[in-house]
Length: 77
Image (cartoon, rainbow, N blue to C red; front, side):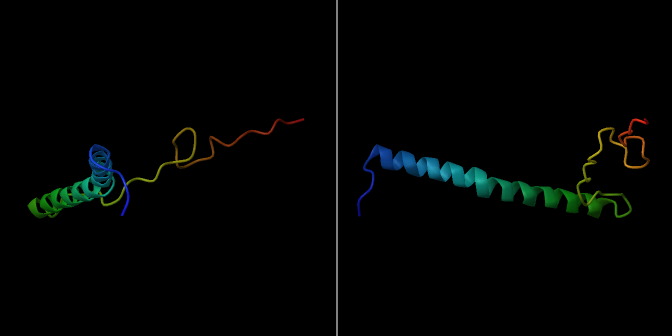
């Protein structure tokens, strides 16, 4: 089996391991930690409001969800 020898082979394994850590291992650890923190908060006070999902961004320019203040006005002729 061919391939790189010596230091170059070791360096490529280090790069691959680092990429794997930051792309797969670390995000899953952060997610587990965040879920454990949420579960601990919920266990401390069961009547406290805990946001369970991220807010949906509003596509309007003004950030208002209601009303028609941001509709483009057609010029009257």
